Length: 265
Image (cartoon, rainbow, N blue to C red):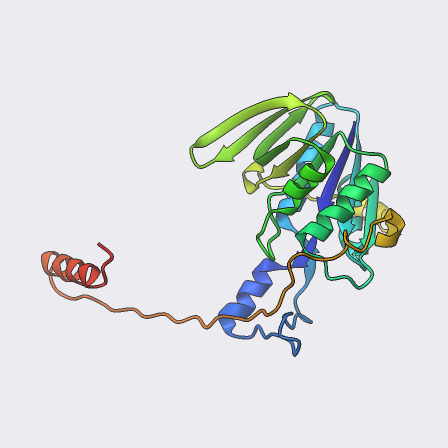
């Protein structure tokens, strides 16, 4: 069984939030990208849980190869972290200066999967913490002609069949099917494991397979974004707080009057 995990390197969301709250997050001169020299980069949290889902399938006794692939240059540290966790293959695909949108990323990842061993199971995080779009896995499923099970909190497979427990607003939903398939992993899966110190040391010697988008034979149309980022800005955060005074009955009446005046009730 071959499991391909699609991962993305993102800015540490906790650090970004702290910069925003302190008013120190600035947008660069191009008006599109934040100035992030002091903010560390790491694996997207949902993608890390996708890695955990694959490792749990292996822990259950299924013979499988786990390949991790990412689009972007200079992502060796993140991919070596995946190798320390247990990935058998780590692949970095250089976009060569292209600023890919979700469609282009899906084209690149789909082409890699088709041309380099295929996949019985494709695992992705439910979304990336930087753009929160969550459309790349769906596009991969469409391009590869695979069924998609989104928002999984549990994934089980024997190499042929697949059972996915989905976390929905109405409760858990269990779906079953055959492979191949694409599954997106949600945070309800639980905390991912940490690699051991020994595994980290061994992973330092493992070099990611470096590829270019041109190696995949994609056309110019495949590499042309359909969505182009025009502007990005940090919104001004304002907080207004008003205290109501009096006994409970008086405060309740005041609150109701204000809610009615604001047409909230």
